Image 1: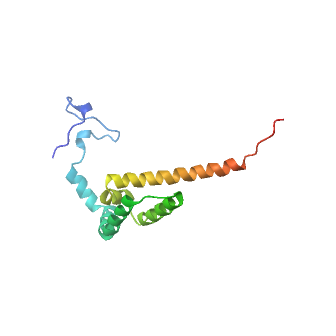
Image 2: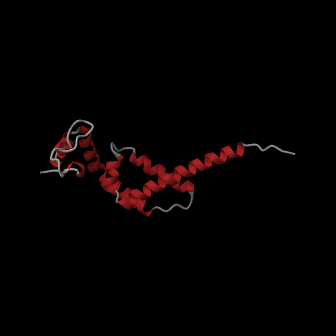
Image 3: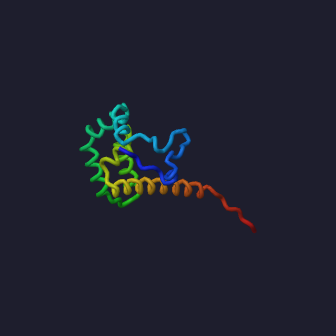
Length: 137
């Protein structure tokens, strides 16, 4: 299996050197990468988690997809429950990619951003309430 040569090195036939001293054409094939992953203890653990918790994560994906918050406290509580479930993962990103479609992943990212932004705004509000004005008269 041959890996395409990067555009910058075409024509010279020697491959472009990378910062590690290897040439781009010396990159390992996909089969070598797959073999290395299969030998990785971490990768095996992730695969085991996918097998063990697959049904739970499929249900979580459906829950996320259907979720509509009526208030910020409801959104915060829901996100806390989702994050608690995701804490079991060795590689949360791999689990989400495996069980959540792009829309569900985007919704989770948006929910996290919304809750974080709300928290920052509440913090600014608390700080602003401590400010005192001075009478310039």
